[in-house]
Image 1 (cartoon, rainbow over the protein chains, first blue to last red):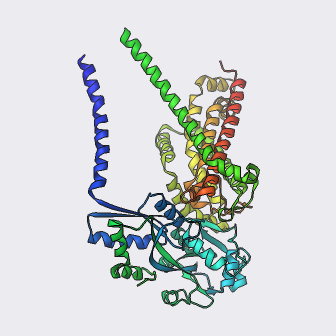
Image 2: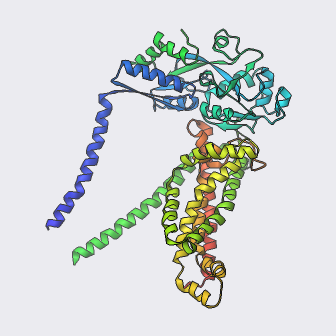
Length: 275
Length: 289
């Protein structure tokens, strides 16, 4: 009988511990403030820096930044999975109704490897290359090599903005070729293009560094200046989205991002501040 | 006495309940997937879905033929390399290698089985893709996918095949050798056929992993929507396609991704059924005592 009693008791211990730990998890959430964000990979590095700056000023708040692409950001904030969704394009007619907060503007750069001799293209050449009509670099002043087109996945705000601003106008719209490789982050595209001298792709201005070369479009260099003064043709808005008008912690965080301090961070990172 | 009877009975019913639970989970998965996929299948039509060649969700085009071909090509490609290599390595470990070598190799193989897919994908992206690019094409290709997938299914085939070969009774080998057969003849004509069902099981498991592999392939196979014409072209198998788009797809698009899941389900059922038939024939031919 002694053995049986202790066995029963031993069995209960892990159960009790489990139940206790579950209740403690609930306790944790109520004590501190948390803000969750997800969506555009273009906005992601900027959001992370803004979150760091905000958390330094308000150490009791935890801001978690995620990626996943613009479409995921929209879906997640709409279903209540996260507090803030990030988008790197205008909202479309069939997107859910959300409150937009303009965070910054961002140019989209057409990138190639630094080893590629081509420095600039016309908008029409870009359309034809991404549409799979021009297939060889020699047609645009480069070496005799097949052009490797790499794009983002369909839910990417960067891709949608690119399609709307470059491929869709002027009419008739040109579709991105079905032979284009696909990667699902800005980093993925950049890494591939940096290592492949026949590749061409597009990324956010904020991701440009010296591992890739940003081409001039119709003679306009891909610089922040040109994006700001409107001469560079591919510029899109970066939004923080909330389901309804934000309150409390979320409102404070967004206000911080739109303040002079937040916008200074925006400018430092290669995006265009709205201040 | 009564206590022992009670314990026996209750353990038996507990195990029965657990077995039912696993079956219930399987049924639940099938029902849920089918339910989510139904809107897509009804709207697009099964034939247009399976045989359509264009996948452009924003344009409302949902043809998955390139994806089905992609899955078939990458799986068959990986098997072509992994089966001979895997069974060969299993023979090596079971029969030829000295005990010391086996003590190192066998745990290494079992460790490889446990490595997460993402790690295989990362190594493939950084190591294999540039190598493939040297040969030709963009690097992100069917070939890179085949190489990575081979590495992933090899340990499964090796460990299970080796166990099967070891399980063949010594009497088989001794009998063959006593009749004057060489080592190779013994292996090829006596031991391997005797281990056939175990080896077949390992191959079926390997196929299952290959068909379902998503994360590693998303990173190395290129994910272009066109049908690959050569191993150096990018491909887009079924499972990676779901992984690439499920995070953000809504409405009809989301439903089509579940429909792809249904296709994968059916594919696995077909493959497993064929394997069971083959194994049953094998058992018959051996005149199981």
